[in-house]
Length: 396
Image 1 (cartoon, rainbow, N blue to C red):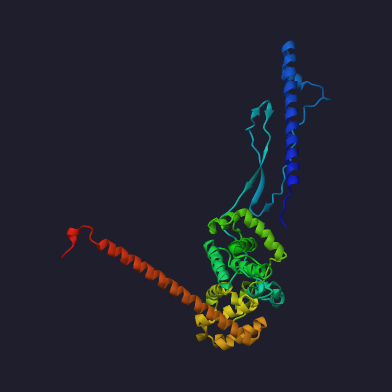
Image 2 (image 1 turned 90 degrees about the horizontal axis):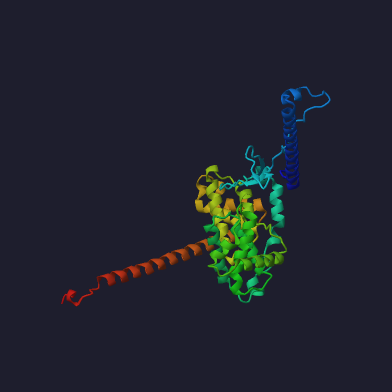
């Protein structure tokens, strides 16, 4: 493990300062001895060099300054590089004191985001998949909170804040795991704490804040999240609510989400290698779509992952090249991979497709309404521009 000790660095710096002081004292003694010898030579007429060479064999010249010890091991921790920089020949005299060597700490950061590559030893080990299937139920909402817990929050409000959270993650180009993990925090909190609708956006921002810390290489700052709320919340409120959410979730933040199953599933399917990136991207899109719908919140992450993968493969129509990827055969294969009942998986996949169709219909209606509004404004502008401003322009 790479690490460094600031105590050791300070000790090395102190040792160098002591060596500098000893060297300076020795130089001063040499200068004083040379000045005294010169004074005696001037009085007696003797040559100082001859006097120095004819000195008694018992007396020896002052020893040269010993070699200074420098720390040989320089450790790199993340982006920090610690090294000793010597300023030779640039000693300045200020107030009769000479400058000491300077220990400087340089922070070398790069804009390149480095991400770990998938480990095949983990992806092809059935024990990892079985462990995920075993613990996934621990991170589900305890109940349908709209009926039992929440009195002031309605399902459409949850869809609105989920859509806002997705837009923030897309705008900031966050990791694909941030949004599903933030929705998991949101649902688990709402399942145990009655919340007023005025605090729902603040809760969504806190969930993004926590998920970004866990999954992003460069987490979102509190100030930036407050900016996305049009400054309706303050960073102090965000940090205070962060502690509240952590306490209510009992600090169990490493939730199992559908994205954790994607690689385990698609690598066990007979998919063409050139289609893997497309299938992965479509599956992540389906999972994000499922996160915005509260009716799918109580489904296990493995079922959402398998249903989304099946919907993605069927949507891409990959069964033309391989009959094993047909709808029925694919559903049976996915059920075996995640130990899910075929009927439950088929029902989940059909529900995901209905959610997709509803989302597409709403999107088309929204674009149509915007198009009509834009057309009405254009016609109004055209009518206003063609209206004569002078009565003499009217053709009777």
